[in-house]
Image 1 (cartoon, rainbow, N blue to C red):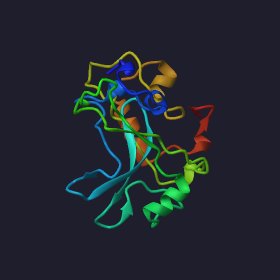
Image 2: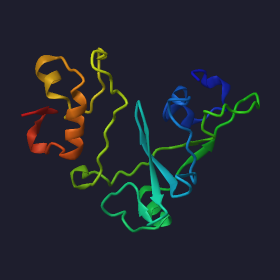
Image 3: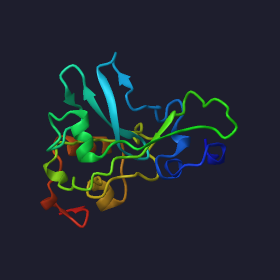
Image 4: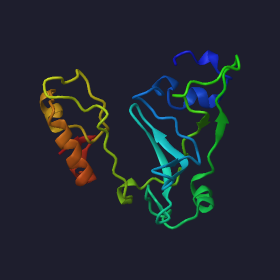
Length: 188
């Protein structure tokens, strides 16, 4: 869905994730208040997005724990969490011609959270790994999108990489490199 002129104009339509990523095998259309796993998880807010995924804030209804944990948010009600990170800003997605949206498209646009006070990431218990670029041995892509400071060492030193990059990514998830090991985004 590259043609955004089909939709009612909206700032969120142009400054959030790309609509063409919503398709079978791509982004899944999630709505605030939506549930997963037979109602166990309830979606409360969009934390952010990237090229291969969207990160949502959800509550585990079986134990009232936030699935995403961050210092200062644990144990808070949804209302209290919104006082810290801001309430979700939403707009309905609609076509200009009034036609029904494709089932693969989301029904509401949600602005990602803007929590400026959350700056001390080293103290947070957040570990995400992106296997969206995983590939089979012998089918290595020409380029990789990697977060600064977590580049695979082989690529830094030789400019090449292979299927073992996933081992590095898992290692970074299990035991994230400390900032003292990094200098200007590179391992020292």
